[in-house]
Length: 140
Image (cartoon, rainbow, N blue to C red; front, side):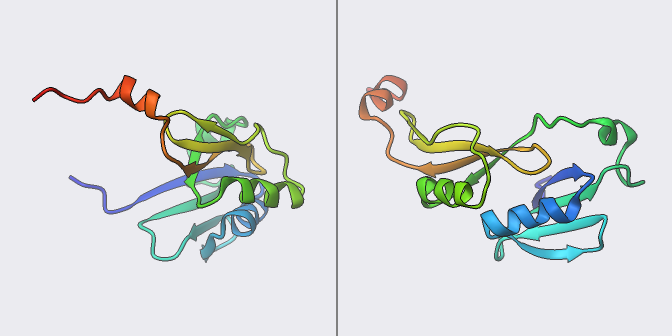
């Protein structure tokens, strides 16, 4: 069975604040807001981000009891440096510097108001030496 779509959920005591963060900084739009549950989308993407109120009956008690997020959401963007600057201008602290990785990513980490980790990724060309070492040409 193939999933029809994908979604991720942030469980928080502050649904509106967390949703506003994603609206402001990641250009997501609210598709549904019933207070304790908010969904955000970007255009006609086949995925959505849900924000659910901690302690709501729809959330397992074990999940509501967690207060530290170890989830990492990855967002692919056109310009990691521009988004990093925009976040800082908006008063958001970056968790790491913007760096370029040899495997073809320019990225940084930031956290949403609930503490969910976000890996902001700009795809760039991989380092040719790294590429050759990790994906050697096959001798067919």
